[in-house]
Image (tube, rainbow over all chains, first blue to last red; front, side, top):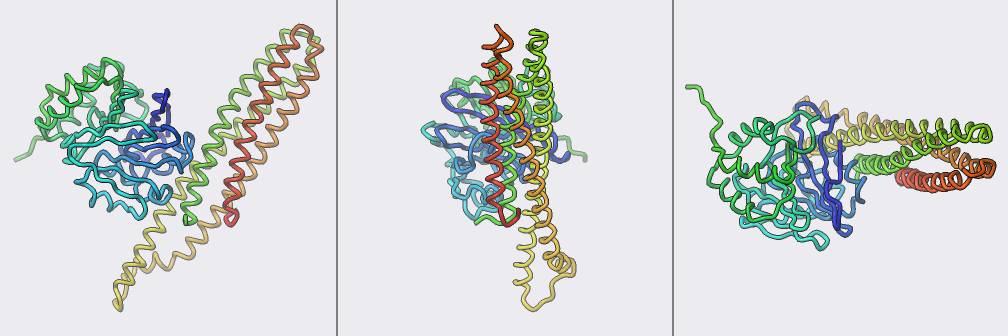
Length: 246
Length: 203
């Protein structure tokens, strides 16, 4: 599994993904970790198949004991089905997830970790003195869903918003936005069910100062490509990519 | 209390992390060995001894990189295997719970096949872990010896330095850097060996 420090100033953002050894049939996913003052949070730590490479990669940056929190943007298996295994190695950690999915996510196995439900309106989350904003992203695509904004690094972790389905050897960042559109279009049209929810999220996010947007699949957006994505997404009709045979 | 499979996964991950850091420094050592060769060539005849040392140094650092790559690949494979075993042991545990709930009713045959095979599987798993840990331990010791050889080269470079006249301060500086890198690599290897010794029962 590849890993890279994508922001390293007063605190650090680390990227994990593009695992060339992952089973072919499972979708590639981006995992992130924020480290601040000897504390760390894992953002969408991934599926059970990725647990071993994730664990091996994470401990290159920080001792396990310092991972005090986990964030799950929603309930999908590629987001958090590794929970039952993390539960054994970081038993004192807290898991922040949508309140809506509490009794569902715990099906992945949770004997030690404590679930902290995130209310619909979101909340702030402290990681060693760094205040992260959990922003509602409901129906994008899950009915209980959140993005994470770090106002210091100006990084937005957008979960499935901005995701693209691409080969494992794709570049880490979007270079040409126009070329990237076909890789994202169907995903957003089919997985995102609500135009109203989409507009609500865009309205919230436009108020933020964002330098980098990190989706959970595919390439990351930097600089002007963040604005280009928001403009494109605003005009995209979602919940539309279905053709049923009679 | 972590079970054996969980413990093995964590140990493999931690050893892998230490080797990753050692590997990064070893790559710098390799660059430094190439610089020493270039310098020895530039100095010419008065650095004949140094040229021999540089060749030996290059060989040792390449060998260390190869060992570190090997250990790293091994730890990743083992972490994956340990997780599979871990998940399988959870499956067996759940089957046992299901059988208890069945009371007097006989358990389905395919479930009994899994449960009857459990002691054998556990033994094989333990043997595999034990084999892995011994192999890993031996590789780390080889790497440690290799790195110590480079330390000897650094000391000899210091001895050779005065013969190279104006190049002496550069050589002394290089040897100093090499010694510092070696110290860091050995520290990572020692930590990796300590993680392994924590699991004495398996080792």
